Length: 389
Image (tube, rainbow, N blue to C red; front, side, top):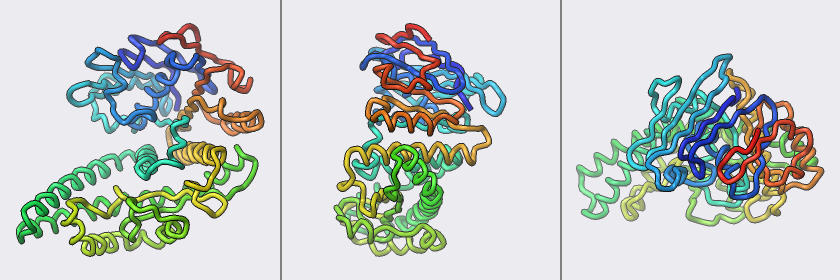
């Protein structure tokens, strides 16, 4: 899979932009603030329906405009495909494939990419929501049908929280509690599938993560991912510390076969607290992923360099996993302003690690930061315009 052409209309600082890409490495160079990251952000949105920089789609629409358009021509399974999404300031976004309207959530079926950017340091050091988002985006890239499961879970969660708030305000009544039982079953149905699918994904990422970390760092610090599940008592509102973080995590194969019953039991045990607080206290929306390095949680113990290397290795592992089980070929690997953070040895090692991918898009503020092997096709950006390339 690769991108052959990107067109933007009223996206970020681009009124209009036309950019061609080639197989192998593509380097996008420009001083900070000129718009190079905006190009790869647009492509990242096509595959994840989100930005690696902001949580609000409307922030990507050019100031003063009502809509922005991302249009990309792709080579997919030997076919040329035109994908398009229109981001609307009011109303729902709209998507097309080969000029035919599709559901926006179905876009990841046609394009797969993995983005690594400085913001990904928050995967290691930030709050659990970022790690949940990482897992769920990767789940959808591997199995697009799970987008519907995640959407159904969010819908049920909102309905259940609304009922809990209502019961708290009015005092729990029999009919409200019986209705809550119904929503419990729906929450358990969708939530258990999400928990199990995340558990499988965490297990599959293990070896690619270790290999990618060794490839970039040239040392083995034992990077490990371990699920921390709220249905087993983990609480994202509490700082567990080292021992607590380890105790709240579980081996994936020990839970999967009994997830439904464990989830149902957890909700029953939390019913009183949930009614008091008016929120759902267990489920995949409150789970976390603990990053371990040298047998300690990376959050709070890893250095800046170790944290950076862990996050980079995690994205490289994701790309490796996608290329292993995808019928459409490699995902497009996007490295946004990465090489400036690395010393010469790690720049060289990273260049070698990504050399086999079908297409890699790289952004950099300084051309000399990027190894020569990656600069054959260079696109220059200045003030929201493609100068050459």
